Image (cartoon, rainbow over all chains, first blue to last red; front, side, top):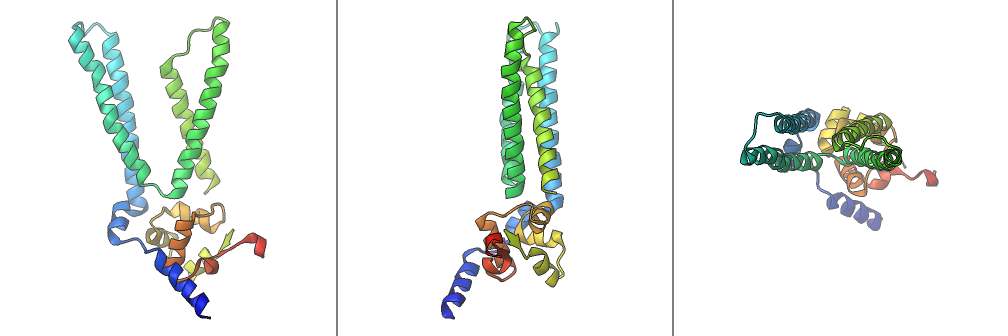
Length: 155
Length: 66
């Protein structure tokens, strides 16, 4: 009798409930939605920044070599901040949310690899070389679809 | 793995959101656990048992042992 009781006591004592600070940091579902929206806004902002820098460099507005390097460096510097934001986004997820992310990334990686290798054969037939921008866009779309599929599966 | 999450939650008159808050997970995760679409990791299973003041065996049942 004591062994079962001791086992129960030890199991219950082993894992402490979340403290108030952790709960508050996670902020419940509302906090998760806010943080997801913030991360999405940061990613969209970064995409716009990259597109803007590309358009600016394509235009005739900037002729100085140094100025062009400065414009090109802005997205690279911003990428560090975006990376930190994305890491924080991942760290706030629970285990099911991480699994959905992992499955979506695996889908994007797998399909992306298949797309690249398939298109490479078509390039040999004379099709234009694959644009890296289009590839990033395709991976983003597949990644988003993967997340939708994941959430529908576990809903 | 089956679980008694829904029953234990109902006994305490908790909403899924309240249980999610107690566990530090999203409400969707609680729903996926209750419907059996997702089996928790061992640390989360221990946390669930702790929240309900139970042992893991009292919350989760192995399908093979039924």
